[in-house]
Image 1 (cartoon, rainbow, N blue to C red):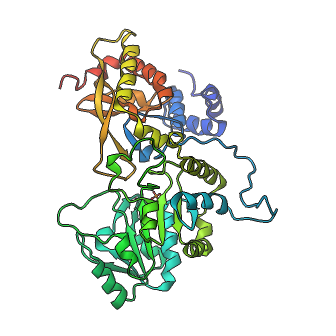
Image 2: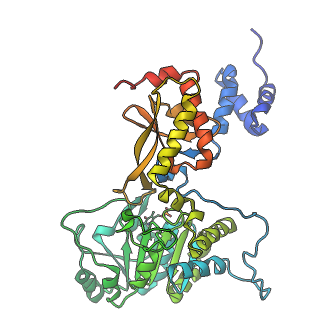
Image 3: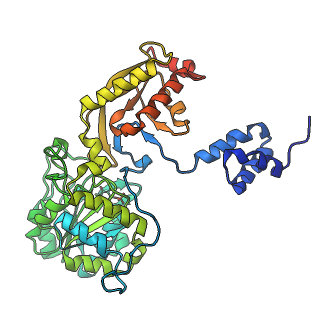
Length: 440
Ligand SMILES: *Cc1c(COP(=O)(O)O)cnc(C)c1O
């Protein structure tokens, strides 16, 4: 047996993988330490796998949190831009002005601004109102959204004193009224329950009712539906959106500020949008936290593009709404084409077929909603193999079969997916994983 290679030699042997030298050195050093020199290339591939890479989402979950929520079409150079320069006067401007004005128009608000995400928006909105006095929240809305966003904790971080009103299942306007009259509540926060539902013996106060209390009403609507009428769609709004709070209607009903995510139903980049009265938006913008929570130019330009699509009523330009409006007939036709393409390549008849599926909005929105969709099914669990391809395809397993929902797959990717399926069904190991659970 020859001596183990030097770290440098081994690292250099990894050059063809494309791994930058310092990373190749780390991988080589670890492989030698683990006495696993023969596996060094595989380890290099694993290392490359940990970097961000585009994937094909075949899960049918439109806003998949693990896959970056809303997909986006965005094309602007990351070169110089008039981020904080007013081109008409030549003076310093605000980075919030350009997109803020577009968003205000889109929501029907006096003003709007952008922060990093909805959690930042809620934090900033509450911090801006905290000096006025305690803030009331219904006990039914002291929710956890996920990723440790918990309303009571955000409230505490904002410096605002929390006054809980009502009960878990029923909170009336009178409960808020009492808090304003007797506990000195100066602001009311309404929080959308987003990722869970209380059903049965329930009652909540509407924004319109809260607006009659005489104190500012903040609404964290989270999911970011811009307008319940969905004027950017050709047809009527999808029925599953019926109970979803929308920014425009919340403001029209009397909310002084609404806060929502940019990358949920809005279909844009990760961002938090604060829209409402000019005075309160100015208060948020002037708060010292605003600087810490401000987005960069890349996010603002992407958000501008999404907002312009809404203003043009061009839902087709927003990938999320394109996915929503695909008909099941259209999806089934694509699935049939895919099955044909794969089956012609020496695959056992019946190993791949068109299936009806249920897609869902995801992203912590509309937890009880699914809508009909279609895709392809394969016997056995092939999710590992599909995930390990150069362009990873993320699928799910249902009843021992691999299911790919085409609603979340861009039609331009169909050929890539078909190729991936053929590889999964005919490649090495196809029989082994294909057999498992196939007959159950
Ligand atoms: C999703 C959500 C948040 C958090 O939004 P991020 O953009 O992920 O920070 C906050 N509040 C509500 C009601 C939500 O639905």
